[in-house]
Amino acid sequence: MAGITVKDVNPHAFIKAYAAYLKRTGKLEVPKWVDIVKTGTFKELAPYDPDWYFIRAASVARHIYIRKAVGVGALNKVHGGRVNRGMRPSHHAEGSGSVNRKVLQSLEKIGVLQKDKKGGRKITQDGQRDLDRIAMTLAASDDEE
Image (cartoon, rainbow, N blue to C red; front, side):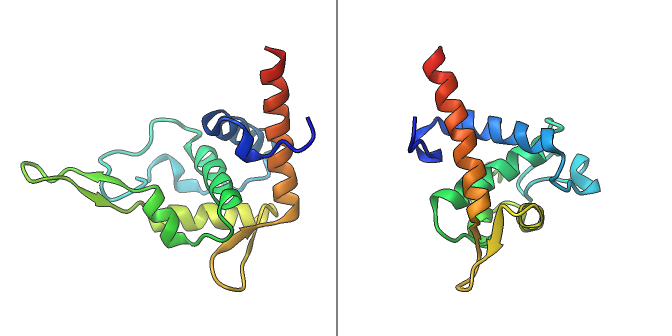
C-alpha cells in the first residue's frame, strides 16, 4: 500500500472522507455566516447541506494538492457555474471570492496550506501527509471490500 496518494483514489470519495475528518477534528474555524451565504452571484439560495463549508475546504485542499500553487481567482473559476439569463443563452459566472478566501485562510490556520512566494497558496508538508494518509485509508477500505 506504500505510495498511495490523493491522485490514486476516487475524488468524490476522498472529498467526503477529508470533509468528515475536518469536521471530526474540530480544528477548522467555520465563520458564523455559513448558514446564510450564497456561494456565488449566480445562485438563488444558500447550500442545503449544513456541512458545505467542510466539503468546500476538502475540495480546495485536493485542488491545491494536485496543482502546485492556486490563488483565489482560480478557485472562483473552478467553483463558478452557469448563470440563468432568462430567454438569453446562459453564461459562466465565477463563484464567491469571499467564501474561497475564507476557506483558504481557515486551511492556513490549521497548517494545511501556506502562502507561496510567487502568489497564491501551496500545500504544506504536514497538509500533504494528512491528505495522503486519508487517501491510504480510503484505498485500504476499497481493497477490503
